Length: 104
Image 1: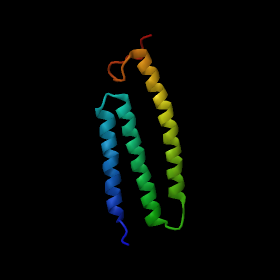
Image 2: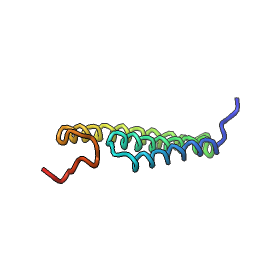
Image 3: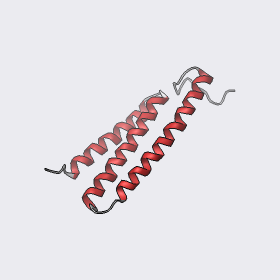
Image 4: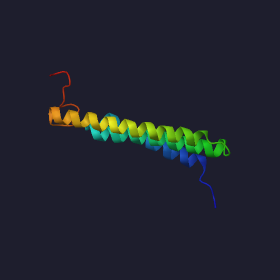
């Protein structure tokens, strides 16, 4: 069975990263921005796994970092969803430009 070259994994990871950056800065919907951040974190996970597999195949540091990032991403999503729900209850929209969080 043939291995996927490291360059292919890095191209995939960089494409996911830049799509996430574009999605974060070009969207006004809070949920879409949250999904873009998750895409950025997943591209970082691909890098950790790829470099762990090709540079240190008998060590597990990359996998442990990936599990840590997945845990942090799950906590980030739960907090972000709570913030989105509170913003929607207060302003009746999830559009960033329609919410002025300074008004009470």
